[in-house]
Length: 234
Image (cartoon, rainbow, N blue to C red; front, side, top):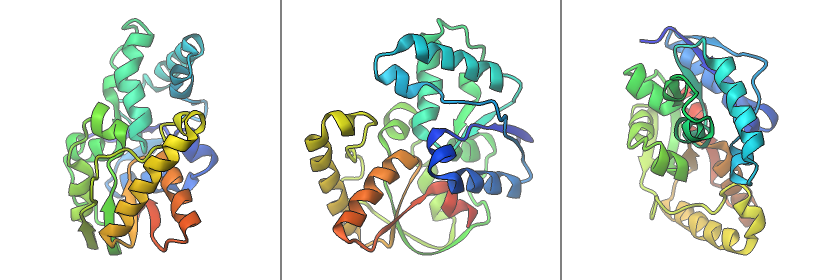
């Protein structure tokens, strides 16, 4: 098992959801894995690439590769950012990435595939439904890794989410540029979450949980959002 990893915390965890980064460290350290946080890390460049700024995205990709090259594995609590690094860096950098993209893992992937662990010694009371975010589902293909981890959490009851694979409507700038369509997609997702009867909805991406959480609050819903890392750290 990898004994030392570099933590890529992501922009959202750094600026809005630091508890997700802390939870990721807590889970890894509980398993005896040493976690380094290179303070010079910045954005992975996904936002720039998606918004039509390939030159800026390339600069950030090169910086990422340089900073995380020394680590045997890079772990991030974001399926979206991990997918960008793994799938798009080779194109952005013309293959000049070494094997850093292939050593970059979303948390559930790292735990189940690299560390070979499903039960991380967690306990969580209540019912939880899982929303498979688009990048984790379609680009990373994490499969059942997150639900296997959730199933192993003591006290947690995992309930099915109707139409789980439907997008929540966030999509980064999509939610801003196509607000009406995004809101309609979100409404369908919120209805499915509430129909599940779960106390909380869990995902691998803070971005989607931010979008879903805002919608739930506006509806006055009692369902709360929780990142996979936070469940596993509990």
